[in-house]
Length: 252
Image (cartoon, rainbow, N blue to C red; front, side):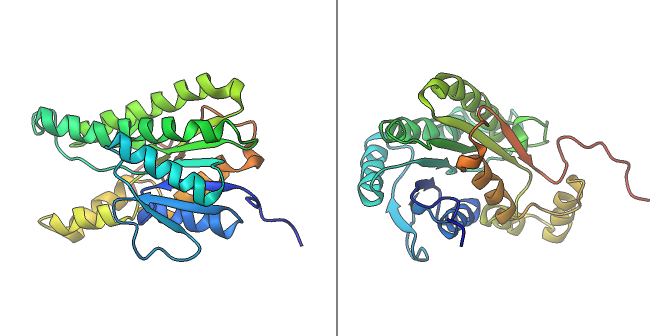
């Protein structure tokens, strides 16, 4: 019987109580990792996942939560920076306060958690960081300028961090999901004037004609986090139904 891929390794997943984060935490655990999830509401996580309450905008709280995770897991080998929030609108639609709020979560949140986890990652022989970025970092999407700006920053953060940490043996990569079928998207559709039409538009925006499944993004994250991807760093992996790379003709 083969040894599970992540046997003996530990992983910390932010935003791990729902959506892509929960799908990733479950997959890593199924493949042998011991997994802790940082989240604002980490209640009722399925076993064997460990839930730890944390707000990524609170540096002191992040440091405390990361240390608690390292204590419970006996170290941190893998960090999945998945916590994030959405934002809609054009340049004219959001205030300065909203720009600061979304950047605080989506960009500085990753900085805070990674910074707190680095002492533990430096002690690992299989250290990996995977950031959840977005196709919005590489494709111009309407009414998503604030969200897109944060994800563009995450892409740059990923590559620069990979350069800084490569000689320490810490790999840093990111995934770029297309529109994923997550609770946030469900809430967005619920608020639409015509949810069915909005869902159809989101499906049609991706060449495969459907939303990305959270489990599909989780599989890409697991690949990048795996020791089997030991020569992969500074890379962004699109999981977007062909949205970034394909230019197909409309169906007739």
